[in-house]
Image (cartoon, rainbow, N blue to C red; front, side, top):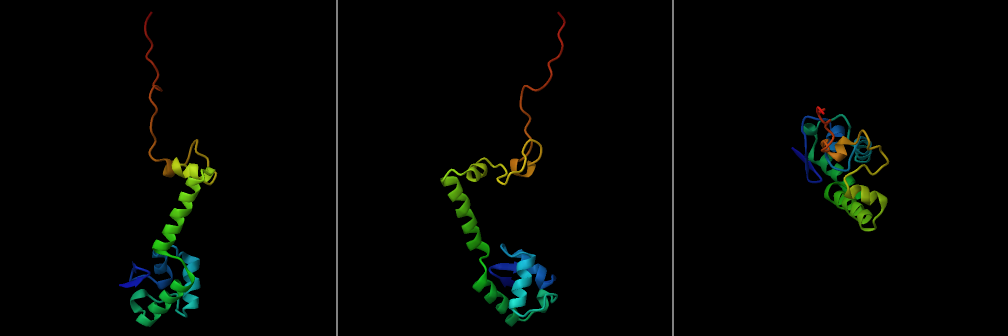
Length: 128
C-alpha cells in the first residue's frame, strides 16, 4: 500500500486513477503530475518502485496544495464569505445552492429530505 500526501492509495489501480483518491487531485492534475515526475500513467501502484513514489510526492509538495491544507483554505474562504455577509455566504449559511441553481423543484441534495408542510390536507366535506 502506497501512501501519498497522507492518503493510502489502492494497489490494484493504475497510478493515473489512484492519484485521484487524494483530495485536490483530479484526472487532469494527475496526468500533469505524472508527466513532471517521469512516471508511466498505466503502471499499477503495486508495481511501482519507492523512487517513483517519492518523485510523485516531491512534485505534489512543490507545485500543488492538497488534503488538509486545501481543505483549510476552502473552509476559510467560505467563512470569510459568511463573515462579510455576502450573498454567497448567506446561501452557505442557509444550506442552499450558492451558484444560481433553481430551488423550487430541484436542489434536494443540498436542501435535504422533503418536509411536508402542515395544513395542506384537504378538509372533509361536512353535512349542513
